[in-house]
Amino acid sequence: MSEDKDEMTNKNLTLIIVALLAIAAVFLAFKTNYRNEVSKFSETAGLGGPLYAVIVTYTNDGFSPKTVEIQNGVSVIFKNQSSKNLWVASGPHPTHNAYPEIDGCIGSTFDSCANIPPNVSWSFTFKNSGSWKYHDNLNPSQTGTVIVK
Image (cartoon, rainbow, N blue to C red):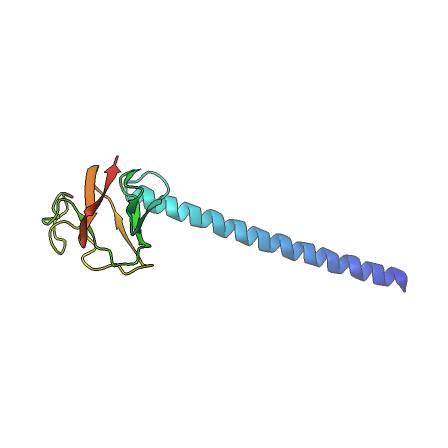
């Protein structure tokens, strides 16, 4: 009877190991497929590699970091951690037309076009190389720069 119990325990252990290996294989296949799809998307978009985002935080003291360098096609996430609303807009104030894609709410498409409340984020994907100044439209003395290579 002891041998039957040991044999049953070994079979159960074998089944558990096979199940864990199957789960691991499915996980790895999904992870690899996800990476491939992201790479395909970024290559199709002309980015040549994986997509990334850079976070610029806005506090009561202004933007941090004040200057970021990114590759063309990368998004910048502007995260409002101040106690007031934020309105990200392309320089210069008040025309907002420095970034070359026009058709935004005031001038450029690089414009949140609305207040960003505290603890809320807004992102913009840069598709034009250059040095792009921006400001808080509600407090134009608070500025920053995105350098797109």
